[in-house]
Every structure is written in structure tokens, then in C-alpha cells.
Image 1 (spheres, rainbow, N blue to C red):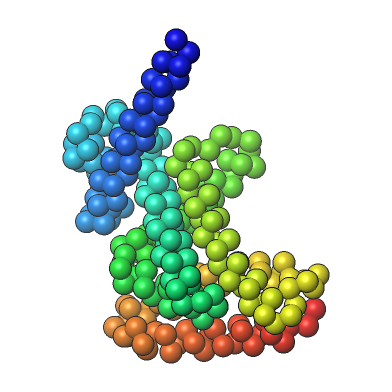
Image 2 (cartoon, rainbow, N blue to C red):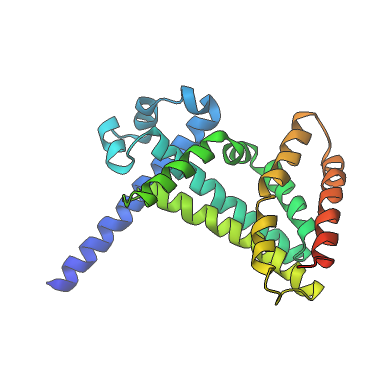
Length: 223
């Protein structure tokens, strides 16, 4: 009897996951087509084949649903970058090329990640954690996927530090934290380049200046 109950719970969990993923996929497309402000929860529910009340059984709000869409975007970004680095080698410069590839393949998701709503969701998560409040499922996914992406970036930086022979220095962790803060700058160069109609090669040339400065700084870092 216990086994049957356990199997039933597993089936319910799988079904819930499938329904939730379906809603996220439909919402992602709605946000792409209409933008965050003009995307309507009623229409998302209708396209998903559920009532609006059912949607709110899975997501606390429209922003919570968007947090789930962002979590998916971060997961896709991390997979894209890790796959690129595995093939082309782990270097700070390769990060920019990998991000350009992601932005080309998933332009809307790249815009989501660069949107100010990421900041708002992060702020909400921090406030909740400081206040001892529980996070929603979407907020947990967003936090974990964003953190996972940052960890991947930090790993590349650590590898560069290891090659420079300074990995064991006391200030190494501070370097990782400082360079990880450049992630928005890297994405900003790509975003602005595309906005001004620059080719991928032109964007890479701009990024190469930034990466060269970073690489030389890491190699000659003196704590």
C-alpha cells in the first residue's frame, strides 16, 4: 500500500512538472511576442488550456511567472556557454564569444536577462531571505540558475588565475568576485553592439580589448 501511494505521488509530481513547464513555455512566447507589460495572464492561461485561477496555483503573480521564464533563460545560457567552452577551451576571452553565440541564437532570452526586471526579482529574493520569508518555486529556480551561471563564469576566471600561478594567494577569492561583477559589462557590450548594427566580428574586437585588459590584470595581479 505504501508503495502504491509512493508511485501515485511520483506520478502527481511528474504531471505537475509537465503542466508547470507547459505554462512557462507558453508564457515565454507571450513575453517574447508582447513584452512583459502587454502580456496578459488571461491569454497565457487560455493558450495553456487552463483557467487563470489554475495558473495562480503554480505561480504567485505575473512577476513570479516571469521569474520562472528568466530561470529557464539562465539555464539555457549556462548550457550554451559551458558547451562552447568545452569545445573551444576555457578562457576569459572565450566567454564573450560564447555569449555572442547565445545572443544570436536566443535574442529574446538575452534581452530578458539584460532587462531591469532581473534586478527587481533579485531585490525581492534578497528582501525575502533577509526577512526569513519562504521563496516561491520560481524564485528558487531563478536564484539557483543565476548562481550556477555565475559559478561557471567564476570557474573560467579561476582557471586563468591557475595558469597565472596566483590561484593560492589570499586575495584570489576577491579577484573572482570582482571579475564576476563584469558579467553585465560583457553582456552590455554585446547588446549595444547589436543595437548599433555591428557585426559579430566587430563586437568581438571590442570585447577583445576588455578581455586583454582583464587577462593582463589577472596575470600581473599583486595583492
